[in-house]
Length: 109
Image (cartoon, rainbow, N blue to C red; front, top):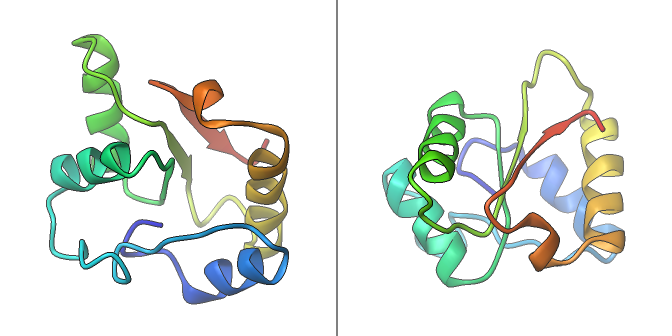
């Protein structure tokens, strides 16, 4: 989870058995967007964000063929917390890391 994601989303996912790591828990809450995406890739985790700048970083990596573990983006004004939790749970349950390699997914699904 990116640093700006509400705790309610993390709690909701964990209550459904989804393995979630926040940037704060990882000690990565002060990293730049580039560093945070690199850290998520190092940990083999997909990064969920509301941040347009992080989305731009993912697009830049796609264009320059620099690998990353994947980004899931949602605009918080276009989706409810409940729908975010639902959609992220689906992605976690049916997908795997290879499915998200070098990809950006947008919520709602």
